[in-house]
Length: 116
Image (tube, rainbow, N blue to C red):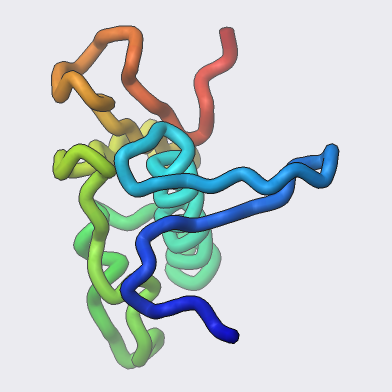
């Protein structure tokens, strides 16, 4: 039986074969969304030879790209906008301000993850 399309719980299997379920209000769910957005940014960059000016550019169509990279830019699990920052035209970072909704606190989530 296929899962209901209304189901908001996503599941993965870790390297040990254990099922891991990600509910929408979790750090793991945010990381999954951020990877999806990051993949769309990477596809945009490959096709346009530059980073998008903002995440909304990923929802637009053009003659070169008749299908959008994303149908819509999701909000993080706590209903905050994801932050998108570029460093020149080569690197970018995405950030969720996390459950507390405040930037620069210990629950911020970065993509790609910042090295310690």
